[in-house]
Length: 403
Image (tube, rainbow, N blue to C red; front, side, top):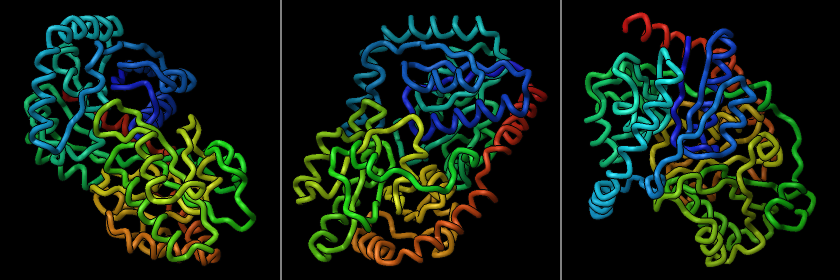
């Protein structure tokens, strides 16, 4: 079996960690499979895929296309569409080169892992080769992307949805396309409970070592504007005013992996923290290739998305690491936990609720420990990546058997 993964970027975000889990799972389930990862930009994804036994290749997008993203503003959507149309002449030669690269590999199946590669796949993949779209987003919340994807779906054999909530949305946006739910998974041999190095986390954040007894609370997310950074900063400011003696330090871990207007810049987030009087109380830490040490250095892992989360990989990873996790309970993230058993929840964007939940966890180390122990048990039952390759290969075999 020859499987080619198409990915829009070479940097590492949630969808890319899922792709790496897929590569590892396919190689474990089908050791003779030949796997290639083609990314439209360079980055650490490719080296990590090679370590898992995949071949890799970069097919760089023409200048300007990497910046294109979706927007919920009708004016911005029209502007993006107009900008895309003006750049089409540069896109066609790229599609020809990409098609040639794919043809040389002679794949049995192409697995597209992002919206840009979904849209390119009808033009870049031979009609003789079946295509799978991995659906990591609610396309119904992305009007321009949803409209384009609906009109590009004719060649797709199966859509793989990462949660039941995403599957419902995909069926509505992509009528007629079979949808298989394959929830994201975590490598439980890597994401393990255990102590981290809080002082190292402080160093990465450019802060002095936190005083003994400080509870470290962190949001691990891309800088997408809907990931809840401002909600977290508002909660931090509220607690700094209401409970200045509370032993807490906040961390924003991540970066802008997509160069679009839908992402904050680090400067914007630093300015937002300063405007809220949080200098010295919030540390900004870049993504690392291996986030396990970051989870281990936190006492509380935050998930704060203001829109329904397609899955919530940071929730699953934090639970696997035995951390107390706070979840913005909407979309697929609401499927991952049991309230007050293995995580605690708040209403998306509700600062007052987040303040209350954080205060409760900071003040109660026993509760943090109980939630973390239960979270690990849940991860072992529901998120074990050992079974991920088997589930994905079942989809592949079904597609290849019917094609």
